[in-house]
Image (cartoon, rainbow, N blue to C red; front, side, top):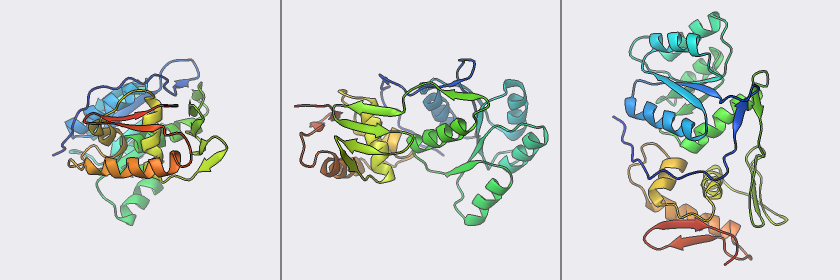
Length: 252
């Protein structure tokens, strides 16, 4: 059973868009029998401007993929009829070479190796961060240069703060800032929503896990980490709006 807390929608003022070479939206298929998770993933990818369809079992997924011809597939390993590895084998035998990212609750090394050696391109272990999953999908799609073109600047900017979504470099002025993966995802979410107050629930939903168990105190801890690195010796950019959430803005 998946527990999902749905935050109020936060509009993205400057999305980093990926488009197909003909200018149409990226096509994605989500395959997962957990309806709540499938709905959440579908919503998150549509938020990125993608054309998304979903299937709840392996056989319907194969039929959908054959008809829809997606650019990327998010495929759960454990499905009610045939498992994700069998789905992958059938797609590859059909000549479908789109990138496939596995979702799995398993974290044993053998399971990961099996998925990748079977022809999968990447995997994410449940529970996962939506931002991490989307970043991995973007990486897979960018490498599919035959069908995909990136039509936007990967660098997010606010004042003298810059974040490069491709190189994962963050700078405040000329100073290079070393961030952990979670700190990077938190800053990226804040920079995608500049001068807008975002709540702890919204941050948890986008940066941590689809099932985070209500650990809202972790947001305060990571905001503190970010402040020490981003605002050190400079005008503060990360602001607390008491009782509401956090705000990233340049200047006072």
